[in-house]
Length: 142
Image (cartoon, rainbow, N blue to C red):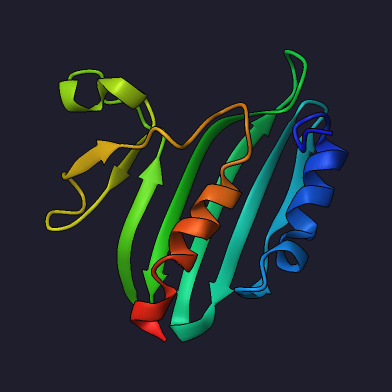
């Protein structure tokens, strides 16, 4: 069953992430229903070596299955932001067209340096990809 079948299925998916990914040392993720057809996912996932993923998703199921309307995912090492993903459209940036509006902000000019993010979606959970991406970097921080 898809985690996006219903809000309850997505809650089950979110609240069992730590059981499926042993690299997660702590989770403060919480799904908050804000209305009949709208919810938010907020919080962070902590990993070894002071590595964290700060998560925000706007969720809706007005048109059927659960979808992500918008998101922000930030990777942190201690007090330093390593990179982040967001779904803010940048239609005038042709380098992002291949994954519009999904993109990643990366150094050196993290605010303005954006690259396509083809692995992110509005219709599938993004957290497994993001966790695996951080897991692949863990050895550099532990």
